[in-house]
Structure formats: structure tokens, C-alpha cells
Image (cartoon, rainbow, N blue to C red):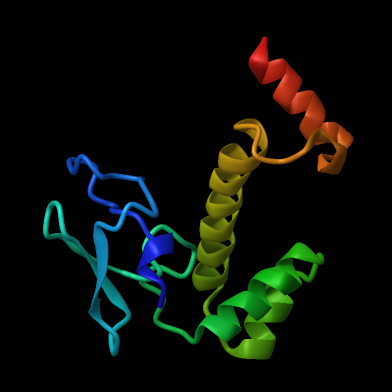
Length: 130
């Protein structure tokens, strides 16, 4: 657990989304929770990710999302892992939203060298800049 890589998730806190400034401390190692010294709010390590409030093992979720990304039909995943189809589609939706946020944060904000960006992403970045 590294609190220096975390940021406050409270939108009303002046330290919201500002990582590495020393205002996040470990609140509970056992429960993997952090606390903001500015506003006093606590949050779990998975806040803001596709794993937030997941009641299944994180390895299972990663496996299911990987299978979906490689084109495995959701019905096959439901049958293989004895999951509900709504659970699988929820994990797919949450992981898609997280990927979109990461893409916006890294690629569209200029955090990645253009030599490492695929042509379709480059086109989206140029269109959104116009």
C-alpha cells in the first residue's frame, strides 16, 4: 500500500485528484483503506476502479474481463464460472468505463508519446482538439 500514489476521491475536498502531495495516509492495512488528512474522508484502495465494491475475488474479475476482451461469449463465461449474466455485463461495463477514464487521462491529455499511440487513437485526439 503506497499512499503517495493515491488521491482524495471527495469532490468537495480541495485536494481532490491531487496525488503525491502527502495528504493521503493509510487508515487500515487490513481493510486496505486510506484517509485524506485534509477532509478526513476514508476510501478503499479500489475506489475509482472496476474492482470497487466487487464481492468476488479480483482474480476472477480480471479473468472474466480478459476473456471478454478476447471475444469469449458472455454465455460461455456464465456457464463456465457459474455467474449471473448481469454480473458479467456489469464487470464489462465497469472495466470499459475505467479504460475510457485512463484513455482520457493518459492519451488525450498528452501523457503518452505520439509514437506509442495507434492511428485510430491519434485521429480521435486530433478531432477532439479541433
